Amino acid sequence: MGLFDKDRMITAERALRGRESPMQISGRHFVNDNTMVPPLPAGLQEAVFGLGCFWGAERVFWKIPGVYSTAVGYAGGFTPNPTYEEVCSGSTGHAEVVRVFFDPEQVSYDELLKAFWASHDPTQGMRQGNDRGTQYRSAIYTVSEQQQTQADASRAEAQKRLDAADVGIVTTEIAPLADFYYAEEYHQQYLAKNPAGYCGIRGLECLI
Image 1: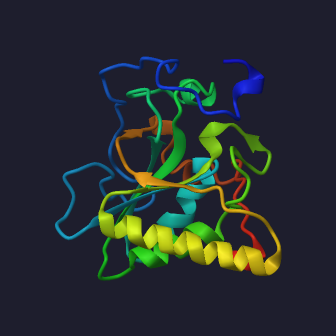
Image 2: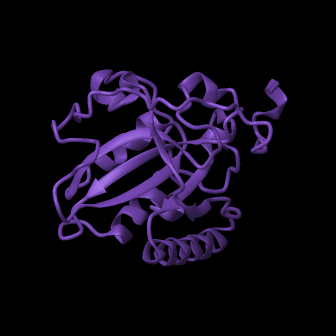
Image 3: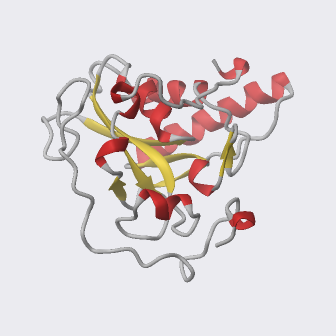
């Protein structure tokens, strides 16, 4: 795909074929040393969010009390086990996302949704700030019907607040999670390993 196609979703027929072998990662969270891969302790739940570059997005969630671990990866597209370079080409259909494992007795899914809406601009379509491309789209990938209901309700509430501030229309994709593919090891908890690294996370005042 060329540069001018990066803000348009590719079709399944045109997407890269990918590979059978998953990305090999350590599986340990750099910040808290908890596991990022199943099996996990009983009682934890999963949430998946896309809000632009996953480096800064992941840091939003690992700081929340009750979050057991986070991991960055790719979801919402067509290519199995993609590489970062392939995702950035726009040829996979995937968004950069954060997988959050959390203890619902300490933090609710609704609270995670509030952090999601407060941490980015959900009106920008296939970009976030200066980061342009389909991989930077706003997205919530749900793992249950209950999550789908809560996510839809949160989007409606976000739109009300945007309307009141005369800001724009929510473009956030909300869909059941099909697959999550882990990103390369160097992306995991990137801003903890590189404190001066790039972070494009910017929220809208009306959603904070």
